[in-house]
Image (cartoon, rainbow, N blue to C red; front, side, top):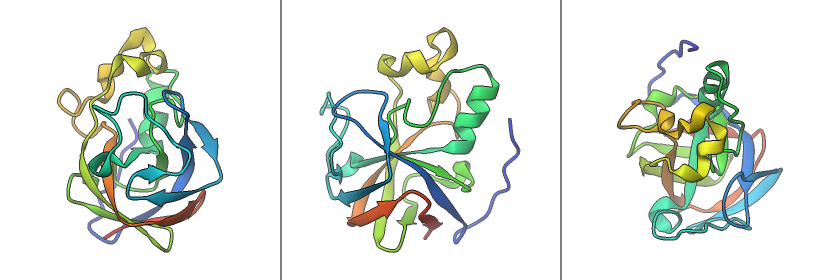
Length: 163
């Protein structure tokens, strides 16, 4: 597992990949997206009881976590776990509920909760071990949901700054 350096408030990274789908996984990569209070334009969720809505408008995950999971033998890749934004350069343990992230120049989101992995992403894990990204079982390895405080356009390569 790569060693991450903890940087307090003010650390920055970037958007590695933007991902959408017409419902389900994997999500496919696009170059830019408008983000509103309800999520990314063109992105849909199959099960609105557990995905989507204003408190789960955007799902984010760490490229460094994906690479570490690949090193463990999992066939995961950006977008495979259903995240909308694959980000790089942030100390993922510091991305916790209540943290605000400025995406690009305009979009401000606030992390609301950790996501619970489900069997729909089992294909992205060796022996269907999708529980590997459960916050309860493996703290610091979960994807996160965020609400949109300020909408706007994001592009691949845009900076991501912790507020």
